[in-house]
Length: 116
Image (cartoon, rainbow, N blue to C red; front, side, top):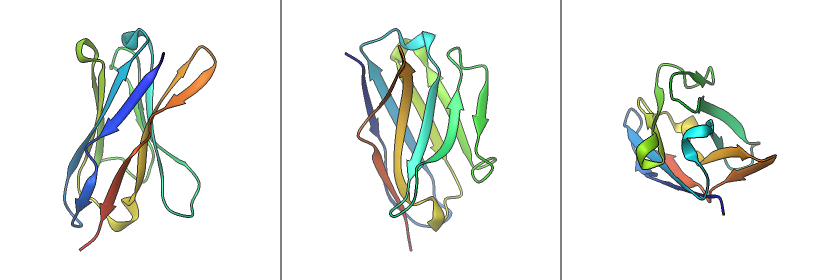
């Protein structure tokens, strides 16, 4: 059973940083790319970043490029999203996704709130 669990969200002031984690289980993690999305209140889901199965390739949304860094630790079945220089518009629930056997799996998300 594929399971994804996000953590690391919280309340942070503008300009602050957080590191989000996505712990995976139930499948061969090292064989799959992982994607972070976010969804702000009243808005559609937005692509944030993705990382290849081996971790040697990453892509970012224009809005986060240079501020967010995605990485993975395959022995620990975990993907990280380091988010720096946070802005109020980064406030959202952040989800990690894996496309496994034709199904888009995601966790319950972790809430990031950027406010002074």
